Length: 192
Image (cartoon, rainbow, N blue to C red; front, side, top):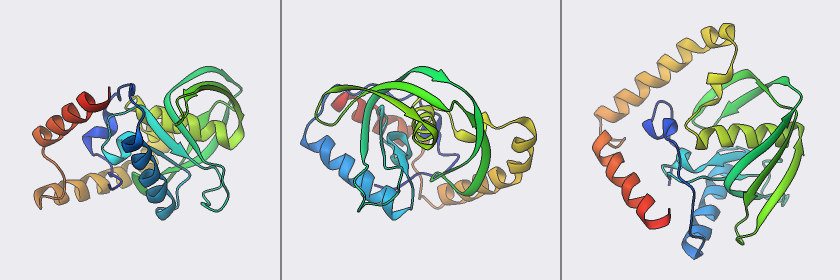
């Protein structure tokens, strides 16, 4: 498992709801947490690791020793309140940080890894993480929410990431469109 980088096509993919929670999924979640911590992140969505599932993991502390871990399966944001801009980064966009407007409070629901439907009322940084990761599951990347001037400022960084991706693809480090379609179809059939 590895974190895919922009402009990998799965980052624009509309993830499908998970229907099956089993040991294999628990192992996937554990590996996602390990990868998130190794990359010094606070959240990681399924499609960032080439999984077409509505699933993300998060720990707002970014510290594996502080057990503030959350697993959210099939998350839905039910209500948003307030608005503020804050700096965001993303593991699929190395070294890119952008001011992004988000709701300051949200109410959301998700299925936990034990299969329980839970509801959360979150504020501040936690609310920001959930909104960021939920966007991923719907095929949206954080920079898309930036204001027009910020998008202009990051254009060069996005072009550079695109050139790196294209170069890696030519060397066979990224799947072809057809290989990705086949992989997504197989993964979806197994769990959705």
